[in-house]
Length: 486
Ligand SMILES: Nc1nc2c(ncn2[C@@H]2O[C@H](COP(=O)(O)OP(=O)(O)OP(=O)(O)O)[C@@H](O)[C@H]2O)c(=O)[nH]1
Ligand SMILES: [Mg+2]
Figure 1: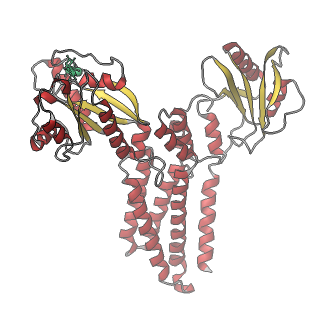
Figure 2 (figure 1 turned 180 degrees about the horizontal axis):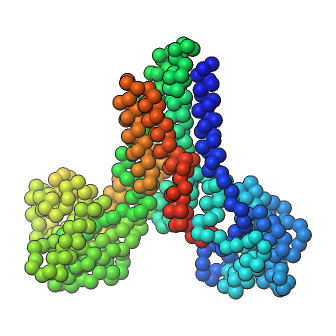
Figure 3 (figure 1 turned 120 degrees about the vertical axis):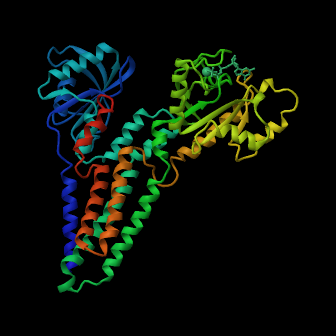
């Protein structure tokens, strides 16, 4: 009985926290939602209480089309009755719309004059104004149509450039990450309710000790699940932002040639002069569906030339921060003996960095390359390795295969297992949540009140990720990255 009372009180508090996120926008906003530039068809969207009136005004009809059914209409400027275009219009009465408000869509021809004419006509209607960047999604969030992680997923989906990024973003947009955190929050709500009931009623109402051990078990299980989720090797973040792969090696071994080979254009200067590259040259690539930011760097050597020295220092800095290193050596100048070859790589690459060894200029190898080929397949201390000729292209396929394997290992399969953490914001709050759970363990034996406070804090950190609790300060940052109108 006491337990039930306490549980329902905790439930009500949680519901209140959710409600505070459903504030509503007042005026009606509009924007081109289909992006900028000349195109066959452009979509202009409106959201807000004036959407229905705006649609009637622009179509010159007293009736709205049936909800969510496209209708062909002549679109006129209501001020002058001048026809602007003929296009398809759709009416989405709230709450069954993207933002949850009354929305309308005008699918018009995408020429600049049509768009500016329709936008001008909309802007002259009372109560309508152009949308701020991200305002449609922001309204959807405030109306409880999506949580913050889903909004971030939508932003990522709009910006996704590779298949793996699209898969991950779609999963997040559809709410998988949000549901996971929501489930954890509910676990905490329940644990907290039990603990509070024990604190409040254990003496007079005879709440059993067993309640406490159930709370402990739930918190421990959550701690473990959260720990595993945090230990995902930044997979989601890497996939979202691109894997930073750095080409490194001694001067003149063909590092810039390798960058050019992989990006299929002469992005970096290639010359027979050792020490050609000084600045870091960066290109973005899509390798087997994974996003890669590939950097070519200055050849690593001691030098007295101050400009080259700066280049080498930048190269070392990039190497330290690399997610993946492509170590390039001259195949004609390396030992075929695995231990010595492993040591040569070890002298270049930070010990913990995942690495692929590229033995370039294989076209210049004389006689038997068998020993070197065998060393490439040896395994530790030799990292995954391949012979390559940037000149002839021989070995490119094997290199791409190795790259694909490493990327799959770093980023994981975005469709497998529990959804990945995609943003530093999430890992920070999860880290704080885990710390609060650890403090719960410490307080639990001595002070149940303090222990309960830690559970409340842990739940608060989870709530900030999904936006169910005080996330106002991050909203601007999250929604600012959306295109205008999205
Ligand atoms: N034969 C042969 N020559 C190559 C190959 N790859 C690159 N080279 C040549 O090697 C020289 C150096 O190539 P780069 O790509 O500039 O080498 P790098 O490692 O970037 O050199 P730095 O920027 O000076 O450190 C150039 O003359 C290239 O044409 C290859 O596979 N085979
Ligand atoms: Mg170079």
